[in-house]
Image (cartoon, rainbow, N blue to C red; front, side, top):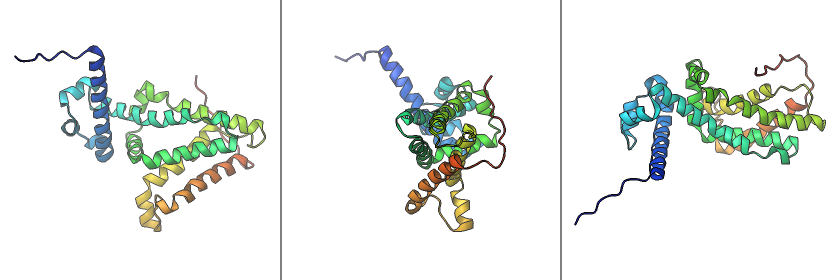
Length: 229
């Protein structure tokens, strides 16, 4: 007597679809980071998953949409981490250091994120510009910074004339450069920016740099901050 396999229940099908989608995104992240947008192949992504090229197109629609989904998930990881940071129960100096260190740690742990952002810049941020979800991901990062700045300015710890976008750029630039330019910087100057022995030095240096910026007197007028319509 042969047993008849029961059809998957709706909840199981949803979980299977979510697992398949996550697996595709995992492999696609590695492939796009390795080969770039132009060099990545959907066939290659399918070959390293438990699905088919046809199913990748079913879930995502095409290579362009798949890359956009990869970017959305990659940016979503750091935005979620920023939102989970309990800055309201820290003094402003500790809070901004913690935020800077979070970015430092994230970028170091996710070199694929650095490569993906570099690739998207090569393509003029066209995928970010076309994605409503990605377009909304800048505001949460600035909201966290603005809360910290407001607390620091109210207590007299931070100078009043600080732009959240400038501060975000400073933190991101240091953390991004340290990973993205590791090899060229090392070849030119003989120093590995990601050397574990120097990790705490650079982590503390970032925090010190940010605090110095927040407490320094301004010597030049900054441009007005752009606000959303």
